[in-house]
Amino acid sequence: MSFQNNLFLTSSDSDKKAYVEMMEATVRAIAASMTDEQAYAGMPPYDLRAAVRTDELLPAEGCGFEAVLEEIKAKILPNLVRPASTNYMAHLHSAALVESVAAELIIATFNQSMDSWDQAPVATEIEVEVIRNLCRMYGYDENSDGVFTSGGSQSNLSGLLLARDWFCNEKLHYDIKKHGLPENFRKLRMYASEISHFSMEKSAHLMGMGYEAVVKVPVNSAMQMDVEALKKLIEKDIADGNLPFCIAATVGTTDFGSIDPLKELRELCDRYGMWLHADAAYGSGVVLSRKYACRVAGLALADSITVDFHKMFLLPISCSASLIKDKRNFDALTIHADYLNREEDEEDGYINLVNKSMQTTRRFDALKVWVSFKMRGADGWSDLITGCIDNAAYFYSRLAENPDVEVITAPEISSVVFRVLPKNGSTEDGDTMNKRVRRELLHHHGVVIGQTVCNGNVCLKFTLLNPLQSHAKLDELLDLILQLSFK
Ligand SMILES: *Cc1c(COP(=O)(O)O)cnc(C)c1O
Image 1 (cartoon, rainbow, N blue to C red):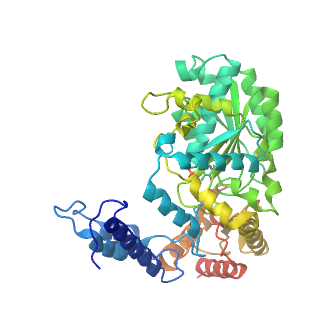
Image 2 (image 1 turned 120 degrees about the vertical axis):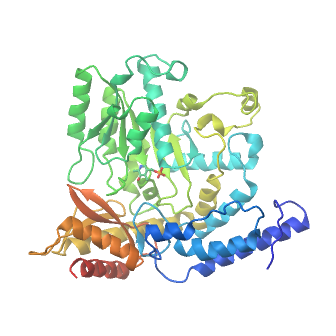
Image 3 (image 1 turned 135 degrees about the vertical axis):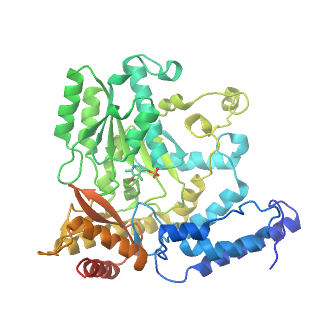
């Protein structure tokens, strides 16, 4: 087949034909590349780097789409990791539901930009509707609002920025947006557990306060923020003249899926005049499980919530939202420009979403949520999420009964962290053995699992986001891991 070099999809018959042919050929190549169940074909980094090295990225004369597609088929498709494989469970990185891939095609083809209404009329109205429904789903009332973002890191930055500006406005009567940081900014303090996501520190840096503004709170044996320790840290800071402005709870820690006690944290925030941010990048998906939603019911207590749709919700990257209980706080991110978001627009009913956003040009990611929620409904979604959490409970029970394995904590969501214990008299220490097993799985068995450190020991991690995962497969993987450990 030879492809035309048409530029865009327009109303012309020639453009339509070229568009359909290019999409069809691409879709066929993608489907044909799925030849086995391996999560990764295994190529090590130096070989892969050499295989994709190119000095001809911009050849003098273009080689046409057919040749490019052939190169994609040969070099790229076979070496992609396959998050849809039941051999893939390394990170909070999911496969993309097929209907959301169809939605991506619409998003990319029409390339709406969500900053102003005139660049995205119906897309703006759909995002507004999706956000309104999401706020309701997490227990917020009509004073709430939200915006789609590029991911959990940006949603956290957005929530923490609003928290800090709210605190300075309300308690110090000082407007950071206009004047920059106050003179005593080194006294600002936010609290997050010692196993919170590193976007807490990154946000503190980006906000001009630095890592030292983030007080790390110890966790208990269930990997949840220790409320008593937190209370002492806050009281000490107040006694020292510091300014505690926010508790950042993690609802689903990256490694363990543990959930900080939101009710107790809310009480502390109320007592000391602080903002409660909930980083639910991982745990936000639990709300859809009829069986387990109660575990995240406390999200309604937070002043801001980070929701990630490209983790448990199985939607393509990027897809995330930042929800805010009192929408007036979005004022911190609003700035008017004559060329984009005129104040008179809003008076006439044109919503310019850039007023709530750190990004300007922004994707129509809300469509993926809209498509997928409508298509599967609450029943369909509940089954998907419940299945993953049940799988984690099952795998944990298998590990807990095995004397060759140490488990860290019972999963509240769908991550299980464990380490294989070296046999008496083994020449290999536990850290070396567990690291070796993970690398061997990656390069020789097409299995991609996670690795982390807990209590100073290297541990292995299964992050179970794939509803296709089965108990039988988990048993098989455990057998393989034990076999590689003791070979
Ligand atoms: C993944 C994760 C983030 C970051 O989200 P991105 O979408 O990767 O930017 C933040 N917090 C927690 C707890 C996470 O697991």
